[in-house]
Image (cartoon, rainbow, N blue to C red):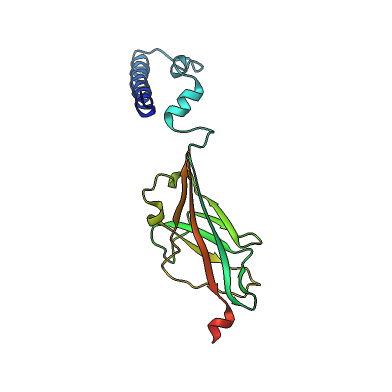
Length: 182
């Protein structure tokens, strides 16, 4: 028996039991019986952990989706140098002036960032096509400026195993202020 069929049979049992419990409570209320506050019918058959798992909630994270990349300032005297302190955001949909990022991260001293995508976005099909990444803010002391546009950097799937998916935006190279003046 597969995990899916076992999961679904438990879910069906839960839904049927829940509906029956609600019907009994409704009948008791209409007949004037009052239910005791500490009497929890659902926990007679399933533990709290099982109910939480059946409902799809809980303390355990079911999956992890990470987005990684590096922000570089191109055209500096040293070549492409890492940008520390840049704010990077991911959006699933089109970028616009009003849109905000679904998740954000700040680059470290090596210009690298890692975004742990919120769980409500884990089920997006073709995440690498549906979501894109942008540098949202540069540190004040940076030799590079942001290039604003509607397009964001696309993602590439690097790893998908055991409930973990890792996508990469690769290197995001920004032009230096000096290059723009020329």
